[in-house]
Image (cartoon, rainbow, N blue to C red; front, side, top):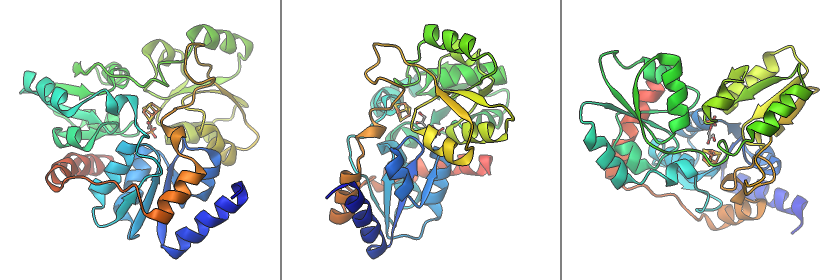
Length: 311
Ligand code: 13P
Ligand code: SF4
């Protein structure tokens, strides 16, 4: 099948099986265009939670699909490729996280949604980049906090809340690969451009940013800001939705270091999903995401607390 035929076949299967396709902003444009809903990790969780579809196909990375299954156990949750991991989730194994938690028994354990369901099940609260500040601010000032797995988001939260967080040593390979040398040069070449950055970026980059926020936040910022040029420091897949929502703006992706595995700031995990794999997973109703019921119930509590706080 050529690309067009594949797209038509996916839409036909989606209709036949009454499936819901959810896609993250970092997916390829072709996949985003086929989705019923495209969003950031918070928006996608909310959509998954309220869906009545028998089948949810989650085009994103594994921890996102797992969160959908935790929130909506009745739906069959499918992923195009189980290898769509995440350096943050993969770098925080449950047993090591349990040992880390046990070192700080008095601390409230807050985990960034980019972690496995097992790690969420060991947490008091979950957050996404959209609501992390609200979640931290909801914790009484006298309670110490530990935060995992993203040390860059953790440092950003410390700087914004003046709270001391005990940090897990994890990072996003994409947001740590920006070249400060090239970025400073780019800013000098485009003095009127605004820099919008995701908080998974390192502090030295965030210090230069005009706006710091989640993928959904960055899209809103570009839309609402009366400036022509923007440098976007997050995964390049987001450019597709920004161009749709803010047509006519000039978008410049923040450059990565040469030693980065991708030429630009692409997440190799997000990009393992293809139209063909999306088609195959709808056709075969596989691979399916499964979460053991005990873990699911324990993971649900901190996610529901987060949804209440960010409502
Ligand atoms: P958002 O919550 O902003 O969509 O970010 C998810 C992510 O994985 C960023 O790298
Ligand atoms: Fe994980 Fe980074 Fe990819 Fe987001 S961009 S899914 S944090 S590896």
